[in-house]
Image 1 (tube, rainbow, N blue to C red):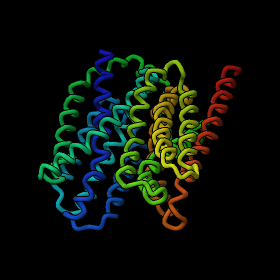
Image 2: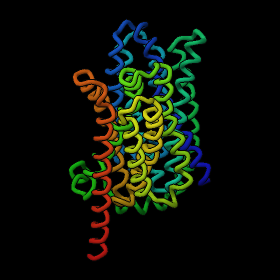
Image 3: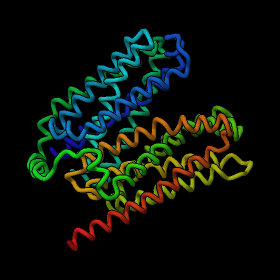
Image 4: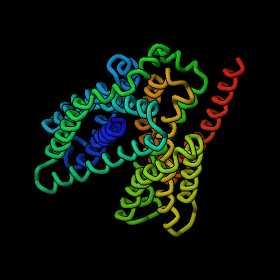
Length: 395
């Protein structure tokens, strides 16, 4: 039963990744058919991000009231309905409307599943969990490509993924009894736990540092992926085809890196993985930054950044119950998710503004700022947690 539930959770994370690449894959066709500018994609993503932030902040109370299993099943169903709504949208305002349940569903399931795995499974499973997200995010562009090349249109691509999500949601509803396998432990934790307000969380030592750490990580990851091709093509004068290929390898590096990290995560521990990941990403950024004529260092650097990013996100999540207590983990993970979405939403576009005014050559320097910020905050967080644990033992 324990292993079967883990498989279901992995499948749920594939479903979380499936919708994430659809809009980018379909938008070149969608904006023409909807008769809106290319830039309007930003409005849709902002609405989705807003929904994920709201539902992440509410995930603590929802999960305590409904349980992680039911929150996950309902959230996946919400995204399935939203994706079907996308498929029947003939006007841009309809996309904006359906983006609301899309974002609300994605944020709730993300926080609920991350906390459940952090509480009940080993570190390796957290790495593999996020590897499965990458599989979902990698599959959906192929589904959209199949729909477009087959002459079925972008709406069919959304419809196909919606049907997959509906099937996955049905599997989650059927599996709800399995989520009670830790019921006794959860009930014991529930006696000690209580819902925390944002102000109460911010008073917990280390919470502010981990929120900025999460913000910095997502800013680094998303900025790297979004602007890699433009930097290589416009500044390094790499061919557009090669630039696109190595930009995609950055994401494959994250996915494959998380798969490999799963085999060593339990031996190395979360702190070592986070530190090694940040230093590896920084080394990759240095390769991109090197002022040499050869393109190989910059191309290899992007892949190394991806490998460096691989363990950071899942390890920070998995360390949350240890750092802040099991009774506080759901509330804090929800706020961490919200902080992550803020970094994802605002920092890549900010670099676009910087690049348009000062030049895209600042790309590696912009990334290095976040890498150094993460390293400083990570080490500061470790010292704070050690100090608090020592203080509690003494008292």
